[in-house]
Length: 143
Image (tube, rainbow, N blue to C red; front, top):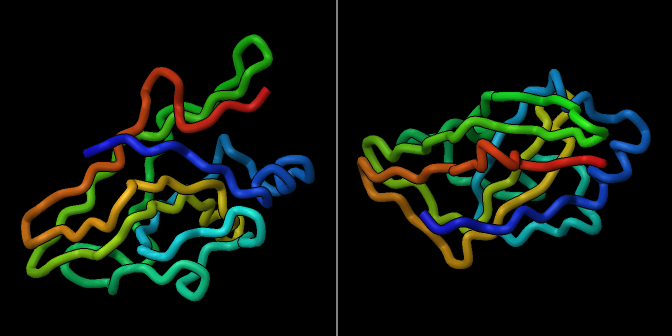
């Protein structure tokens, strides 16, 4: 699957300054949508802001729960590394979706960022979509 640039929500920056996220212990989720996110005004993930595919055919309502591989600070730089996550269509199709939205479900679904995959994707039965993360550079760094 093609890689996509990570776009931070403005509210994520604001919330970091106000201790609104504990990135080391957060439970992150990745939700799929075909609706263009607005990083300047949106603050919380919900199905009104970002309509997601129906919870069916292997897609879980709210998206996949992600695993934090590491959340550490070294040399004054915090790095969040998340493990890859796979969406698998089962018994039907998932989609269409073009965006994958990363949010902190343990902080009342506060938005972190999103990925734009360039065009709509629909997974047919048994097809997979992998949220492929960078194990070296992480999802995001804070300095």
